[in-house]
Image (cartoon, rainbow, N blue to C red):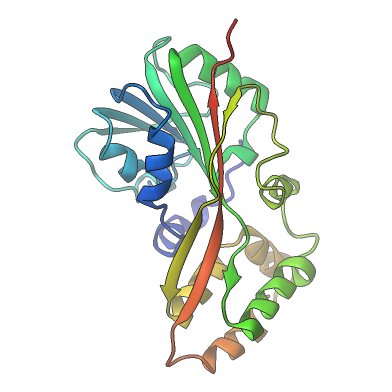
Amino acid sequence: MKDLFSEQSAHYAKARPMYSEEIMAQILLSVPERDLAWDVGAGSGQFTHLLAEQFTHVLATDISQNQLQHAPELKNVRYAIQSATHSGLMAHVVDLVTVAQAIHWFDFESFYKEVRRVLKPEGILAVVGYGLIQIHDEDLNQQVQHLYQHTLKGYWAPERRYIDENYQSIPFPFQDVATPPLELNYIWTPEQLFEYLTTWSAVQDYERKTGHSALTQIAEALQQHKDSSVSVTFPVLLRIGQLANP
């Protein structure tokens, strides 16, 4: 599993979008028991806090100590520095395994082996993410799309393609549960939008390699919107899987 976000952990925790209760409710439709959930690649706990509200116990793991130290302290959550392939859990004890915006970094085969080991027979795996941001202001949206598709071309990690393909192309050896289309909608300040864009790994790679900011033009455009709000939408990526019958 790659770690591209430790250096900006506090910034990531502050600027990244939060997941909705609607997503959690959709997942819970397939979960028969709510004793133990394992949140893998939990980062700074963007999804962990939703699990804590629904499960008696939650294990949240990540390979980055810097990320986990920015996660919320919750009485029924245990945080641990662990890889996605070694949870430290006993076999067949987990009701729900979740991965939020992280599975594209995993070694799929090794991770799925661990998922099968720890899940109860009726347990569920839920893979969650969000796709490319869409901005309701046409000019700003065109600039962000150009940034993503052209300016940062060659600076995204190869695994990013799984997000572009809506997680439909990841190996997924489980029985798929049908889900409706979902979105995350926010009203942000221009500053919030800019801060979010600075968390893109490709933006930071661009700056390291060129010595220049990839966000200069967008910063200038946002300055013109400094006294207004910005409506943004993220398409939700959601795969829910059940263990295949032997």
